[in-house]
Length: 259
Ligand code: DGL
Image 1 (cartoon, protein in one colour):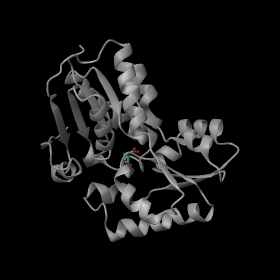
Image 2 (cartoon, helix red, strand yellow):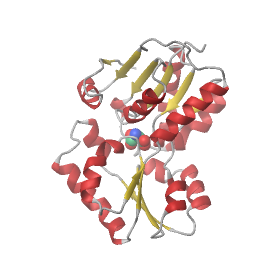
Image 3 (cartoon, protein in one colour):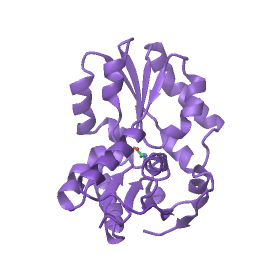
Image 4 (cartoon, protein in one colour):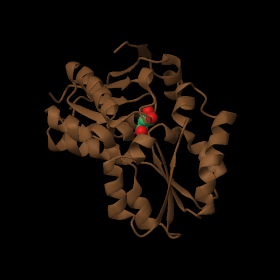
């Protein structure tokens, strides 16, 4: 089993930001990445639909023999991971907005969070916020339209800039000193965010923590791949392979797959 690949899925191309962290920390693991771009965005869908899509992706990866699945999508994690863990007998790693470190470290007692509607309205997100951020100001903003622009390859477009300006202004007005990225598509926007935010605002996302958690769960279950050779990394999308290949700096082949 330890020689089997790690499965990773997202509603689209955003989870490649997590794949990069995992590949950096675990460079000898084989991986299969599944981008459900044909159904992106998940963030505007209801809980039931998000659960069904997450099950579809999970079953594909399990049929491919994956030993562990990383749900590289905040929206799918916050809405569906408990159901997946109950239904399938392999470990699942999820990703949630890093609200805890932001709340613990803020000096201005105000933090911003940018995420999808599906994540911000989830029970899991509310629980975490109540637990760690009840004594500070949390300025939430749905990143409406942002995933769609990234999925169509318009990362650094004028439209993206205009949306970000609109979404960040109330946070800047509230004097945030941390911005939490609650969607795996958003780390690709960091260069733009740095340009638009005041210098003292720190941007945090959960990618590195997810990679560390993946390593420790593999270790704990005796599932680390002992191979020291170059791994097999496969990328599949039911959307446009070119958009995804570009985010992977055209270093990997991305295959179209109707799943
Ligand atoms: N990348 C996703 C997330 O982390 C989902 C975005 C979407 O499909 O709405 O939430």
